[in-house]
Amino acid sequence: MGTSEKIGILLLDMGEPPEYNERTYYSFRSYVEALVNIGFVDKKVLKEDKGTILQKRENLFPYDSTAGPELVDAWLKPHKEKASTSRKKKGHPSILPQLVDSYSYLKAKGPGKGEPDFYEMYGFEVCRRWQLMRGFSPYYHQALKVKEHVKKMLEKKFEDKIAVRFAYGQDPVPHEKEQTPDVVIKNLVKKDKISHLLVAEHMNIFSDVTTTLYLRKMVEDALKEIKSRIPVSYINQLGENEAMNMGLIAKVSDELKILPERSKVMIALSNHGLPPAKVGDYDGSKDSYHENAEKVFQVAKNKITQTVKRKGRLEVVQVFVRQMARGFENDTKVLTPKRALNMAVSRGYNYYIDIPYEMPADGVHVLVKLRQSYGIDPPKWNASYETNFPYKSLKAKITSAHFYPEYRTQAYYMEIWNVLDGLLA
Image 1 (cartoon, helix red, strand yellow):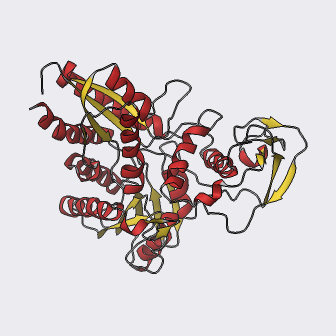
Image 2 (tube, one colour):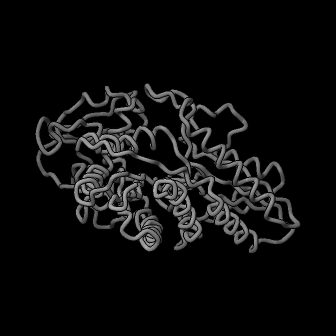
């Protein structure tokens, strides 16, 4: 590589907007649109467009004492026009919201005219999930701190040999700064004059549906759009990195320190999960996620059992969020949260601790979906994003996903360095 050439480093994240609003509606829409494009969601859902779908504000904002019965659209704008009413059809994909049995709509008019009803309904469902988080997700800000530290470390080490930028599949704060891959990559190529692009996904476990067919496709499409042929390199998933496991061991040790030394403890390392069966036209059984998740879990489990020493019995299991374990129902080797709890009870454990180690921060998956899988609905947590709850003879706990960020920062930096070192040689 010539001395004047520069490497662009894209710190790429799935992205999770802190809020759901009229601006982030399109951020969330971009992801579900990708699911439709790969066949994960049947394209037939896009055919229906009645006009503008409306829901009662009080259904969307149950924790807001000022929320009244007024009708709002998916962009949260109120409507007082006379609306029609329709009952949801049977057989709608499960991704559609279960807010009410019927909904209102403005026939063939309003901001939803020309927008498939499916996307508007999905927007309402996302809004409902965000309200279960009291209207705010901490994911973006927690994950951003790690990326900012990695950026500083890289710039300190490599100075003007690199250009480091952030990008997101779901643009988190589009009203403040556009950070979609197409916008960021265009600037890296045309303004920073990079000659090579290094893509570093901020993810513990890679999958085809979210990594290859979503984030990496966005990168490839962005380069095609500007007719750039610069080479692209990718880092390895973070979950296998030694520093990540050091952070996990430190977290496990912290949790065990506050328990009686001779108590029997089950540690559940919880995963996002992906159905190992057909979802729409997408064959989830062939997705690389399953192999990658197993690889990361086995490394983590071995590190914990070899490193953590205590007098009481300790078992480490892998757990998958209920709705993402579809197809696993008859497989007793695969644990959903409730199944894991019952197994812990049957084996005589005193304590059960779920550490959401796949996700890089606390967000809708950990705070809402994971807790709902344990039967905690509406979901709840304390100021530290932890949930303690009794289950039969167990004392159970779900920890925060955001633990020991300094280890995650080191792992992220190391995986980037592993690729960057060869490019700069």
